[in-house]
Image (cartoon, rainbow, N blue to C red; front, side, top):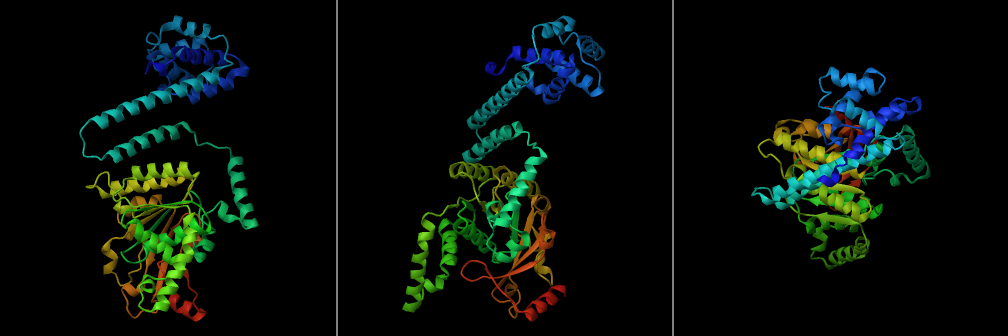
Length: 457
């Protein structure tokens, strides 16, 4: 740990602040150093006490020099512990100039990062050596999250407003030029994409539904669009289905065939279906679609693998998790807390990697007791934090599951119940659910009016 301690640099910061503050042209440098440093950047008690005194003087607008610093430390009863007047004078005397003050401050920040990293690694080695019920992959995932936390902590996250304006104007220019999907994400369902104007690359999107309603069809449609049409990498975490089942759904929708066609006893139908599948296989050979079908992954493992693939592929187009409540819980006895941690972790992942994260989610059974079984946001299991973290929430519903005489047979409804960035998009969208994916469906004016009347009832 001694390699991450430099007492000379600490003294230079203490002395440099005093020198800078005593000169009109150095006032800003002194203020930047005082506000930019914390106790964690110093390793010995005297220097921590002196910094605290600097901060109090700065906040009070009191001029900083050797005498005011001495008085402040004496007022708080810390002068002797801070080294006394002689040590304060020594710090000032041993610092010939404040010209390198910002460089000394940056060095102390780097050393503090090194100390934090060393402590994390020491604690990690302790975890690895102790008997525990946690799996090795969970421990590694937690270590990676801790290390990433240090990296994020060192980045201020503060940008000048012109940076944000430039980013916004670049997106607008892409819309005008027809290249919107360079900066936005297309899900592949035209009415939804148009209503939202594309999805932001930091969106956390939740897709809820009861079993068999079409959540996975939603995700495979997105996979096909992002991975094949837009050629952006897709990372699909399938915690429920094996890789072959997810893959065949994407392939069958791409080929416009059903499993029944491939197994048909009519040779013409079977041959045609196999020919379509063979023809579309060339689309998948070089496609950037990757599927992870490990079950019971923790949010740490998902984030670690997403970071690894992001680095390997030079970025990701979308991350899909099927499904949220299937992920390993940190505290199975407290589902609200565990699901909340997962939702927060996935939202942070979207912001960190700058790609949308789509999480499928199960709904509770309460809606089964209602006359109108179309789901709402409150039907999400452990819905509180999910609603808070999600930028967009879609509900998937098929009326024929409950009403055999429905006019909407073969139709999947995608109901937007929350949209943080496009409030007008909160409505119901209709899709045909053939071929393991979602396709646009057009209603006549009269049909649409009848549907709208049914919803109002």
